[in-house]
Amino acid sequence: MNAHAATDTAASSTTALPLKEQLVLVTGGARGLGAAISAAFLDAGAKVVVNYRSSSQAAEELAAAFPGQALALQADVRDAAGLKDLAAAAAEHFGRPITTLVNNALVDFSFNADARSKADELSAEELTAQFAGSVLAPVAAIQAVLPSMRQAGFGRIVNIGTNLFQHPVVPYHDYTATKAALLSLTRTFADDLGPEGINVNMVSGGLLRTTDASAATPEEVFDLIASGTPLRRVTSPAELADAVLFFASPLSRGVTGQNLIVDGGLVKG
Image (cartoon, rainbow, N blue to C red; front, top):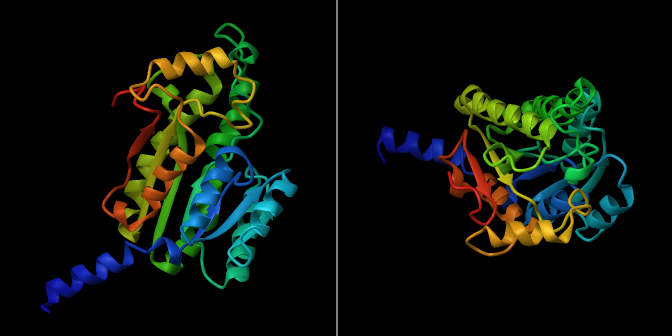
């Protein structure tokens, strides 16, 4: 093997860690979409930190179903110091650094258009609250795990977005605006961290059938969305979780700074 080939092989090995060798942190990983993502990684053989804020019972039950493979840890993602403590506790428990982060946590939001503020009602307080949960918190989580990823020489960051940025059909102004900001950070962080072998991508779903956040959505809304998709159905949390696994797996080693929309084909491009 010549020197060039050896370099290519070394670079490939550092940027393509199998899922079974990864330690994954899923924020808000105990319920809804987060639970589906946690379960998907666990089924794939990864070690998983199931983060929760108040859903201790759900987190502990999920971890108990995968003894030795999953760990439930409490932290409010808006607490940067708490996230750093969580990352340290996870690394100590599993004896390895965190290699993959899924920024999934959604703080205090319900997908019920009737309960959301319209354009003439939207307040600075609402925007500030969503910015704290959907922008500042993911940044804090990334910063908390960066030392671990640098130690491993490998990293995968997957941010959860929304297709409402491309298809704003409901007045979730605060939620959509902050997810758009998170998409921008996805791309700038991808450029910043790429030279260190850390890939940063986003998976954007539409309305999911059904999570805690979408439980208040009327059935006729689900039916309307389903009728507008090529698949004629609403995407499930498990289907979106599959896309998250893709971005963490060796199959995506050449992909970074991207936003994959997983909504049954409702939004094009």
